[in-house]
Image (cartoon, rainbow, N blue to C red; front, side, top):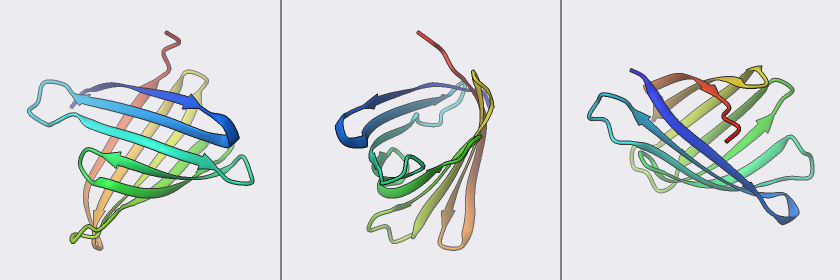
Length: 123
């Protein structure tokens, strides 16, 4: 199913960032997927931690890692009886394009997966 959406990132003082992503599954009854992050880079520029409000998982905590060609992050729902967690990878294809894969896990079972090609828009 085709997706469209937007990610906005804002940088603050002392390595803090805020990021909001909204994804719309076109032509379907699926609800929009919305991520609202607030995070901070740790002592290195590669590792960061964050809290997020996720439209499907609720309040989550997570961590991420910036590698030369990818961004990898994992996060887990807080106070969730289903013990849901998720894993995202964004791989840089070129300066304008990323490949994104995401999976949600409930307990020890993979419950959903999503793949998309993201294009940077300089507007």
